[in-house]
Image (cartoon, rainbow, N blue to C red; front, top):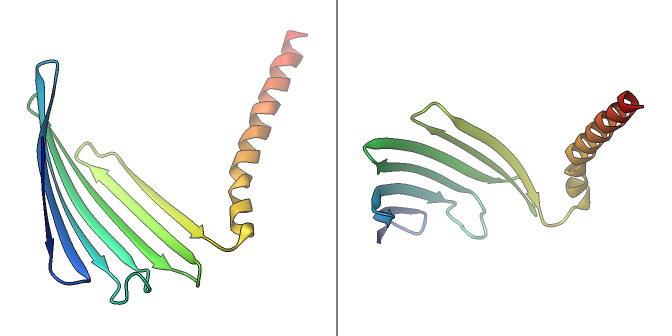
Length: 134
């Protein structure tokens, strides 16, 4: 079961509150989320968007709390920079930065660099293993 309520202060700011419970095999988990979103005054033409959220989950008395922040900033006419960070009460978290473009192929080619690098490492380790077998 999930209950959601949305409060729209104006076209730039909205808040979403969600709460619910989930059950499986006799266990039950409770959770809630509070999310605030701030848009550019010209959104969607102005593509700036920031989101801040807090989530809480209780399962067997174990409380998990997490926070997220995300910001989308236009860099060019067809390019967005998206930064995201999250952290939880166990001290784990993640930070990511993403560049998104609908126009330039060169940016997509940058994504191949880590893939090619990982592939070369795997191939090198396989060739070393084969040399040891001989």
